[in-house]
Length: 487
Image 1 (cartoon, helix red, strand yellow):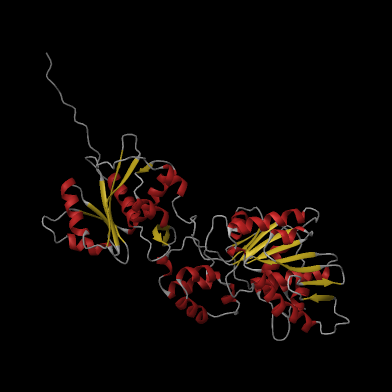
Image 2 (spheres, rainbow, N blue to C red; image 1 turned 90 degrees about the vertical axis):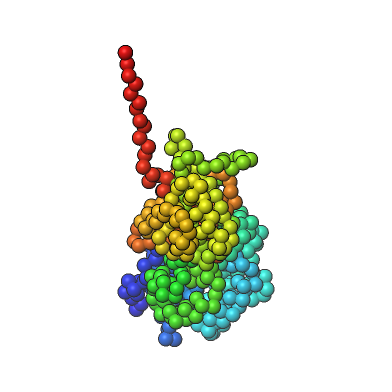
């Protein structure tokens, strides 16, 4: 007898899993698992596969499954679908791959159908009939149930009614395709009480308008079923710069590693071969940002903060000035920040160029001209510029910031952009940096600005946050009351 609870107790904890709404149909799933050869022949079900079944058995009308490669996502969902077809009368299930119909057909013809025929070798007693004809791939069960493989097109769904529609690899669907699938799917579920629409896959290249991302967001908000295995979404290139960092994260978010389906050594090989953004999506379930949607600064809030002007202003008498450079020393920025009388902040890029050979002398010139100190992070690549500026005569004043200072500066800037207290002048260097900036975790609670890819230039927004903090730390001017003689 299969010890469900004992196996389930070994499951790696998912980042998010929705709560139960009904009774788990364990026997149905186990029947599907046996039909796909997942039980016996020295094979055994993995703990995370039981979580997939339990999530789908909750009965939510809409559900999302996000799991990394090599974690049994697809075969678990197929076992769940086929188990229902085997144990329920007139259960109608449709399986779609959002990539292409060819890929779905290949999985059906090469993996699903042969295994079913192997488990049920006697055609005379087999409880189903398999049809492999291109465009008509399906299994018709003697109890009236149907498992059909369909193309990722709304029109393929519209001619039937369905109890369950699964869209696999849904993170790969372009917005138009996702909308078309949903438009075709929903009406077919109207007459089937308890019907379910399930999107599953690995992380996609973009978020906004992504079929899988949108359903995950609903699930995270408690509005649907969800099973999510992923690393923290605020990861940046700095967090994944070394294999040691990545290996530690894989141990906590990849169920294929914890259950022995794959090994850390295998994933290290993938880490060293794949482009970093691809590895993050495939094995850590981190969505890309093509088309926006991942910046720590809201694009709409940033756009609303722009001051339309034909001419950039000069800094006022009192302001903060800060510098920052990219880790690879490919670019640098000098930014000024101040507040107006009502407390609103102003951000102004004084200089932004490629490379850093120009930067120490230009920074010293501006510091001398405006009689302001140079604020900077006291750690990282920017120290190359700082050390060079120290050799300039007369030597400018410096205002180094600790890690605590940089994290405070970043959080304060983001909060004030969101609250409408920050304005800027639409300078390209600052806007592109603001949209590229991500959260980089520091310690258990703090964060600073980070970059998604190592080549992202966020120097201007880093400098802006430090400059605003520097201004806010300036001593307040005391008004002097002049006493005049009377009489």
